[in-house]
Length: 218
Ligand SMILES: Cc1ncc(CN)c(N)n1
Image (cartoon, rainbow, N blue to C red):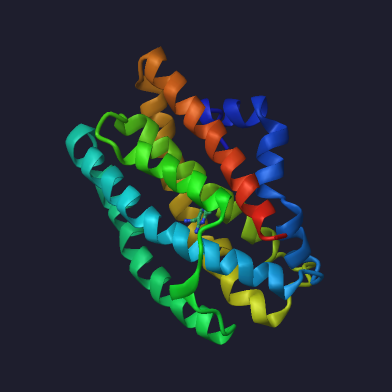
């Protein structure tokens, strides 16, 4: 992986990055020891997250169309947007499989905190470089995490394979690669003040992801 700004930040925040992308909740799915009540808690809260993530991705699309000099940025982001429609349908199907009532889900603190950050990132005041860096970070944490559960030596149980495949599959990995290149390109060309804001968002999102995984433990 070429050494761009994101790779430097990952190195400088290695502990937090590992906590977010190799969380005990994910390792318990990989090892086949996960408690299904934890999985159901995660499922409920992630549905609420996705409902708030959709307008965030739409806001990145708007900023890409206005601020990016490269048309392919918008096309990549549009691809991610389209996938979210299928993702919402998957959540509804998965919820009924586990007898989870999505309409009765109460947002937990970690979910509310994450959604407050998404609101700030949606704001037109947040520049495109910060927004697309946040977008990559959010997607990359899930891709890195769930791909661990698909490794040949993993003991992921059959009931959880669909969820792990959704974010751990190679196509999602390729999509995250595209986002990483877009974010690195804009970070390299950004003024220092913008890079600082993007770095703050990067670290904040890693912490929110750790809090989100922790929440599944109830
Ligand atoms: C909390 C969280 N972070 C990231 C993703 C991947 N879009 C997600 N579904 N949920």
